[in-house]
Amino acid sequence: MIPQDFLQDIAKQHSVSDREMEVLLPAMEGKATKAIAKELNISEVLVRKRLSDIYKKFHITGKGPVKLTNLQKLLFTKYQASVAGEVATARPVIDNSPVVVTTDSVKPLQTQDWQEAPDVSVFYGREAELATLSEWIVGEQCRMVALLGMGGIGKTILAVKLGKQIQQHFEFVIWRSLHSQPSITDLLGDVIAFLSQQQESELPEDINERISLLLQYMRQHRCLLILDDVESILPSSGRFGNYEQEYENYGVMFKRLGETEHQSCLLLCSQEKPKEIESIEGLKRPVHSLPLAGLKLEDAKKILQEQGLKGEEKWEYLIRCARGNPFALKIVSAIIKDLFNNNVAEFTEYETWVFGDFRLILDQQWVHLSKLEKQIMLYLASLEKPASLGNIKEEISELSTSEVIEALAFLKKRSLIVTKSEASATVYDLEYLVKKYISKYHSTK
Figure 1 (tube, rainbow, N blue to C red):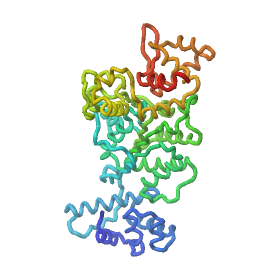
Figure 2: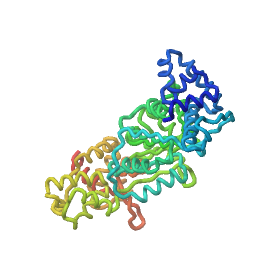
Figure 3: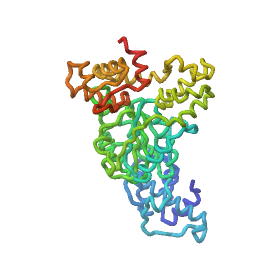
Figure 4: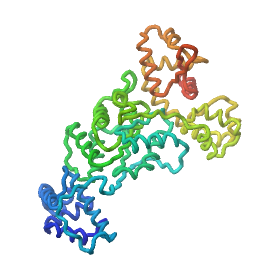
């Protein structure tokens, strides 16, 4: 924090009046215009007028609350120079020349808001994924990146770990979950308030204007905005890539942040790829997506080691059944520890699986499936080997081939089915856990 006597000293050198100083001091502390007006018993209009006069005296350019941020950066830089002895005397040198503040010339004010992001002090593997994402976001300065994969695969943990690793490259880092389905109006208001340091007290009602204001901050500052649980606002079946009713404007925001030039990055974590990503991503474009698979064998073993499990000769089998899904492995490991005396080999003799809370993830996906998609899943679960498109079409003859293909595409992008190549044909199958889930909970329905 800049000492008050330093602020008063340099303010006088720039002819800042006592009344203007009354506004400047609380503004530098991050107080909002409304709070300053109430504290001084004056109107908000007068507060803005005095701040505007101060900006002119310091030759600060920009728009809206960006000018306050630039002034804060300028004064902080001058204070650092004074403390470091780069100024000849303790009294700041008068400098009335115009000032251009850029992120290259001023060290960013690193401000972060992680809300209830999970702790990542215990983290397994993912070195390759971290390197790829870091290169996209920091090296290539991508505007939008999507981290995709089925529930429990570790998207949230990876996104938080990544954010912590690269946070020094950003002035602002914000993590938000869409699990509770906040309206786009509320989300934009929340994020803009944070980026403006609570200076934006009167936001436009029009969504496009709010998005424009967000873009203004993302151009002015280097920001990392992480949105988790994006699938919560995406549709139930039959409308792949669209949005739940009243959430369509999220798509507008994604499209504009992906297509409009700015220096920030929006990182999305989702079980399903938003259609805006599909339409604009590419190797030579600043928009990418990364499908997330399960943990590698050696990394997944660390979860079993942490639980103190025995029967190592069956660890690989257990991990392959879970396809390296860390959440599924943690649940079944706890069961093996409590009921099978830590012995993985004993548990695997029963050729079963215990879902626990992992069932909630699959239940959420199941209820969002259409009748056709459930029909395909039930059919695949009943087979001992994968099925071709022809096999599926014979089973569901009342619908067109295109309808079946669209349903398969939806299931594939939700990580519920896998594709394999056999001879000259592509065949479709279920992941082990998905097949067990359907057989246990839905096969007779």
